Length: 115
Picture 1 (cartoon, rainbow, N blue to C red):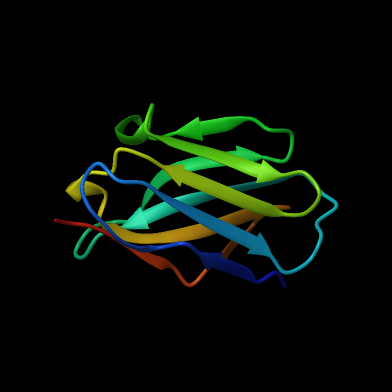
Picture 2: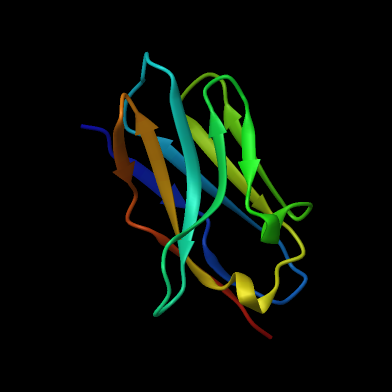
């Protein structure tokens, strides 16, 4: 079992920035993919960005050029730098870890973009 601890959500004005982080509770010695998904009220959970253990990244079209996902090579920590935030980015953001065919989820962190 792996627990994911998220941090960094909050309230920000349009055009502002936030950084989310997600740390796994233990080291993982298989290839893994970690990423962020988001879910607004009444909507499905959608991919935001992912990064693999070898550094390959993938982004939703809606966040390309504004969000950057990165990882800490020393431990299983992933960051999501979110710039030029828009009101439509308001959602609960969930961290995901996929390893050996299993999915693990964090509890979610709320990001609110509003003036």
